[in-house]
Length: 369
Figure 1 (spheres, rainbow, N blue to C red):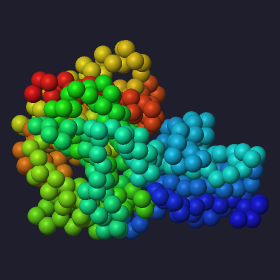
Figure 2: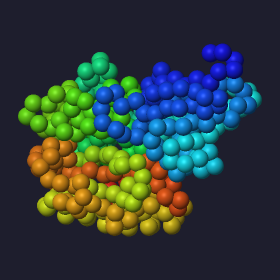
Figure 3: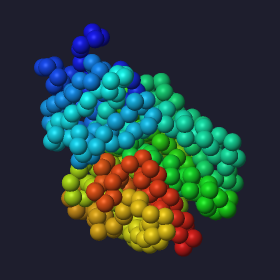
Figure 4: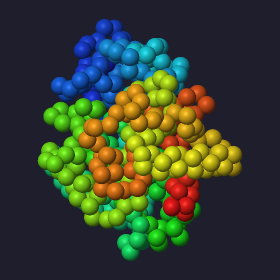
């Protein structure tokens, strides 16, 4: 790179950008769709002259209300801030005098390196194990974490990243599992949670957005002849144990209305009644713990989406539908917002705190079931 040039790159796990040009100190760019339909995910590294005020002009409305996520090491991420946001398609950043490389993303990323760090922090806990579920089409090991007693009579299944860009729930599940180990440890003698953090691990690491992924969406792959090794292995895993709970974690559209809130995608009866029961207990746990511990992400069941409403339509092959077909009593999808609202802002810490709230609601559910 020339000393006076501005450049952006995406040559790292999760990187995604198309750079169309530079005029003065303005960079023109947009998400790399990799041949798929439009979506909003992007992530890039910026380098440029020290002290330069750089404007990033994107080709669509893909800048959230708190500006882009920002990092200098790709492990620790925060929002750059509302003051950095020019509008929904552009933001500005002044390169510090000390220079360096600076990373920006649509939302808060969570890569395989983050999971490895989380797993390492629990490596000496006898109630935690990590093994390989299967190997992806790209040759990557797909991890399977188990938390709880191997002799447990009850089992729960947690799944994430059917759509590669939907990263926020991974921080919530971290908070959930850590709370189970620290606050509800005796309960783990009776139940074991199995966690697949990256269903589409290739998409996560290669920087794909994943929604309606080509040639096939992972969450539409629960069919008689699945295309992907991951979904085939998950279907076998579902048949391995008798599960009480199956939760598939997602994130919705970029922002606005329900998309700014945590919500359940309620299934049809009888599973609906079980999901509503968990929703009710989660509401109580959130009120109790937030009063005691301060703000985390808020939860209000008014945002749950009923079966047959909006895009929650029956008949599509999904992971949660497959789990219900295998008679898992509580099998549903949960959506976590990318950004939240001014009084319930998504951050890595607030997402983890909400995981602890969710653990409380989940333990109340299990105790009553």
